[in-house]
Image (cartoon, rainbow, N blue to C red; front, side):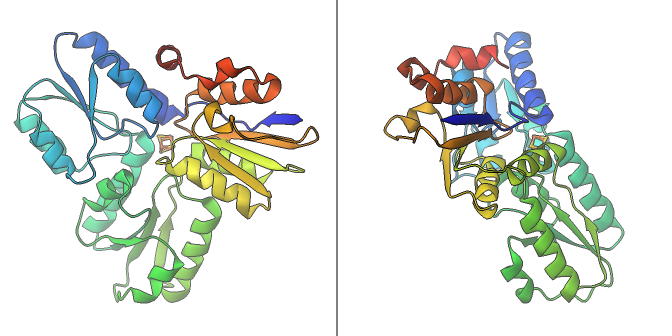
Length: 302
Ligand code: SF4
């Protein structure tokens, strides 16, 4: 079979920075408990690797982020790359916790754009995924922000403000977002656009969209990772017949591939490179050692 690694692969800048903040916290606060509110980035192997270093991830979809902070008595609290509501961060500070904010710069920039436009009297439409932590953080800025998850939402929006700003979650599909923006501007011609899909997301999606003569696309990443899922959707949209979204090489164990098959392997921005490398190596020589995940190798790759 013919195997192609889709580039870029490995961590994006925002993920690398968030992970380095956790690693620094482990070094800087050896005697204090360290908590992360939600998954630091969407990959459960990274969460498990940090757990080996006694970093506790508090992640319970039944509880709000503020309620998760309530559970912490003392120590260090880290907020994730997806962003956090200002009041939750303030709550942690008020409790006397040491706060480390790992919000990605791209996410922070979107928050600034939203705040600035709300101050100027705009109505803000936010294109994002319902209940995703990045959307939740952005929507926490004001109850007046209108979440748009797809074109079908637009018919239900009533807005007579002459000033509308449309902005986006950073990890949305570039093509689907374009369609949503077109539909919004047809109904609200006064809308101004601040499309904020980040470069890392765009470059990965474009690389999948540009694939030629591929029979199978394998996307390595966590099911919760929006940018990973968007890569798989992009593959299907581009007409690739077989698209597999997997977490590790282990998910390939019971699958067979033709000798002539042309396989592309892509990965999300929060997928440890070692997991993608293992998938490629397993496809190449079938060595079952590549099916195991060595958590210490993930920490080494930070
Ligand atoms: S995918 Fe984009 S927004 Fe998310 S952490 Fe990476 S660079 Fe930041």
